[in-house]
Amino acid sequence: MARTSTSLRPVSRPAPDYTDPAYWQGTIKMSLSKFFVLSVLHHRPMHGYEIVQAVEKTTNGCCSPTEGTVYPMLNEFEAGGYLSSKREVVQGRERKIYGLTDKGREAFQTAVAAWLEATDCILAGKATADALQHSQRRARSP
Image 1 (cartoon, rainbow, N blue to C red):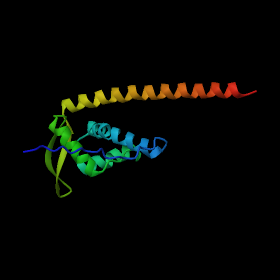
Image 2 (cartoon, one colour):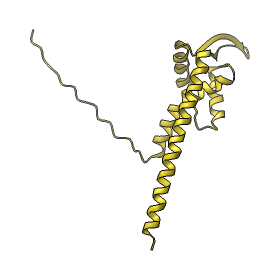
Image 3 (cartoon, helix red, strand yellow):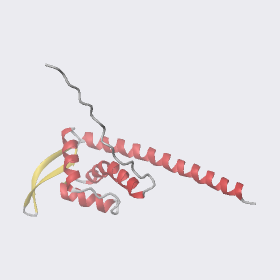
Image 4 (cartoon, rainbow, N blue to C red):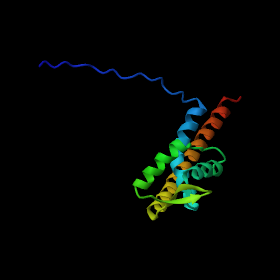
């Protein structure tokens, strides 16, 4: 039997517009969602919809994950041993309540340290860019 080869062509996607604040806001929100889920669960156990509301409230709407993104995240955290869950009746409905395990608390502390380090780098980068911009303005002034 003769073998035929078919070439697969890569699907062309338009490049993101890196000047669009929506691109960066979406990227940041996606990255921070896991952090803020761990953060609200660090305070107390909650059910899924309550987690969504708590993250939105905690971040003043900056990070507002949907239930469609939170439940897969919760499943991933639980499978990794970062969360445990139990079923409880809340307001007449059976809900799955999630709580951090010791491993989850450690993950949250690790995440806090990582985000603080990233924040320091961002602030240092902004300070450097501001200083450069200021010196360039002074150089152009008569």
